Length: 261
Length: 261
DNA sequence: CGTTTTTGTTTCATAATGTGAAACGCCGTT
DNA sequence: AACGGCGTTTCACATTATGAAACAAAAACG
Image 1 (cartoon, rainbow over the protein chains, first blue to last red):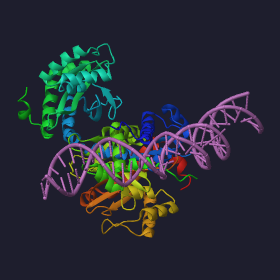
Image 2: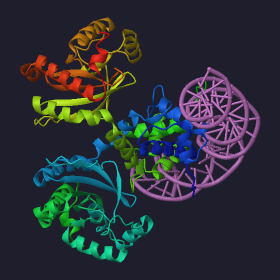
Image 3: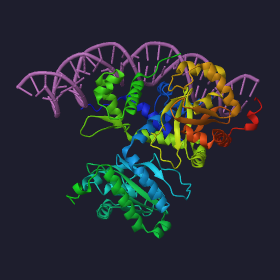
Image 4: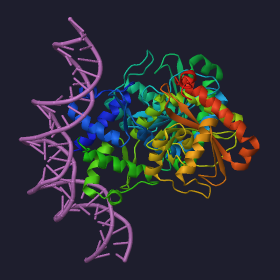
């Protein structure tokens, strides 16, 4: 087993990630300091990335930022994503029908990644989560996905990622979460009230592919009291239905997979 | 002058681009053949890219595709793009008001890159151009941007990129295009009728930043007869006004830059 | 306004790193 | 059962990336 990765490439990715994380353009030395690389090395890699369009150099100032080529790759992938295309219209319907923010996420490496978003008429100044990551233990979408996994795998994720406390209501005990996941599985949707962000309530449901694996999740979220007024039960059932329809279009057979329940 | 780029990194980017271009996942050998690399080298790079999440390996089959990390970087950049945020609401208004497809593009390396898109109520099955590139000489957005550049620079772009003929109406003569660019500059918006795609008419106008450089363009496009019914003159004036408002929000001063007209 | 410090760029000797031929093992096909 | 195609691993070799140091240019400072 060759546990060896290509060093130059890893360093290049480090640089790209530092640039992505940074709000403003960075200089060669600054980048080098942040990832512990010699500025000479950083410079050569940046030069190559610029040449290929993945990084752009600010004219006049010696600062580097992500380039347009990154977006070309990213959007290409995004547009080709089967689940995104299929879910698109459902997200729109849900957003309109409840007039709240709707998200589509994909599980990745024990976390969820926000992939798409629709919002109701209420213009919320909330910063978009699209493209960002979130933990599973304290989000409705994360719990919805966890509820479909075998206990062993869930515990492995919780152990490796930890269960950081974001609010007073964040569940930080694995056993308590496991218990709740059982109920979520029975219900078919997950509820999360202020476990991740104070004042926000969120409902999520998993999406399955042909093989029965949860490959994503959708959610509706909004201010806790407004959500309760609208009826969490009702919203939950509604997104559950939407999730089932999306899953069906992804090739999931509820008939086939209900045999082992 | 060190005209030397980092070889390993360039090869890695080649691999990513091959994967992005391909509709379906590719195998190690296939990738190697396409870019002329030894499969052993391809394999090692893919391994690293997988480890970092930029490429995903299909379970069961030995095929590789772009990974979710690519989207994380891309969308992050996309969301932070100042011009996109500012243009967003204008794109929506234009799409609704004319009930046609509206695009935002950025110029890059003598071409335009489609960055955002809004569509009217008419559901068009047209494949999304977002994330894709197009030449400048035969698109309204491209001509709008070219019309703001000095002749020398325009000719350099035309020479290096060529003026490939897409339809009967594509302008393939540099001098004739130069002439048209003069009129476009006076008018403030560009018209392109079937020069890129048969049956489609498109109107575009440039967007400027604080320094007076054209950093993007917006367009409205649709079936040629429908567009003519709605009045190309009227649509042109309207997007020109929208473009001016976006430019103003980007820090462009029409007062300051009208001195040298 | 000159001095000092910081930062981007280039050079270059060194060896660490990436390379590709070859071999291995795993499938599916013939 | 033999073959061909593929992903994977090994390994000796030298090409390639590396980082110290020098240089240039600009920014910060007094």
